[in-house]
Image (tube, rainbow, N blue to C red; front, side, top):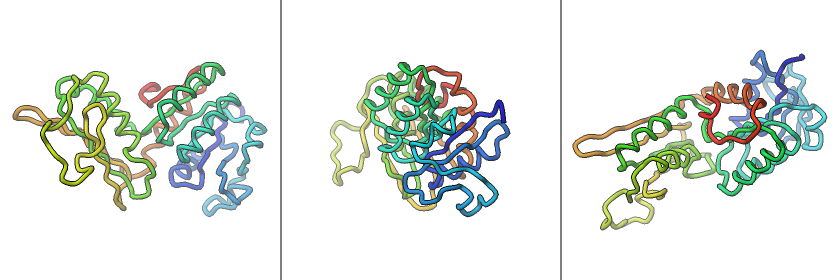
Amino acid sequence: MIGLTKIIVAGFKGRMGATAVDMVLNHDGFELVGVYDPVATEKNLNEVAGYADQNVPVLTLEQVPDVTPDVWIDFTIPKAAVANTKFALEHHISPVIGTTGFKAEEVAALKQLSKEQGVGGLIAPNFGLTAVLMMQFAKQAAKYFPDVEIIEMHHDNKLDAPSGTAIKTAEMMAEVRAQKEQGNPNEKETLKGARGANYDGMHIHSVRLPGLIAHQQVQFGGVGEGLTIRQDTYDRVSFMTGVALACEKVTAAHELFEGLENFL
């Protein structure tokens, strides 16, 4: 299998991790050389329902270097993902991280480590191409409409709020938006939290309901007009186009990037 990109998927027991496993197995340019999950009791992927014909080892961290992977795909939880990213960079494996909830100082430290190691990587709050476009469009609109609020909606099992996508959107808008505290300065919350979280004067509202996957609306208001930019994810498979793109390009990089737009 010379020429194939050798990939490990961390968090393969979760929904996004399982979707990533399927993507790698069905991609002509990739080879799944192992899967990892600290709570897994299986020794091989063929012990998992639906993968009876696959011979892919379930690895411990100590075993990972033995299969010489090129890329580490991570859909785990923030605490684990930070340690996993550090491990990958230290072992010259390019991380492609879809886990959200990283702290700014954690990302900064990982970026520094990637430069020291000369290993490329990507942390992306969202791998959906429509989500990337939504963030780019919102950034353009924020130049002209400083009055804006973000409503992000996800399934009820999501661990972090606001979502990484919402925070990234707010960060991107803050780069070009005129400083303004959104809302009436004299308003009073009769129920604490009614106005949502505040990021640089912009309000972010998080909705968590069963039946949802990932959705975000960026709503702008102007004098006599309004603009709504909305993105909807109906199936987790939509994220895999971006994950595959990152896996194809990340090994040619020499630093850790934030956001899929860096590889588009």
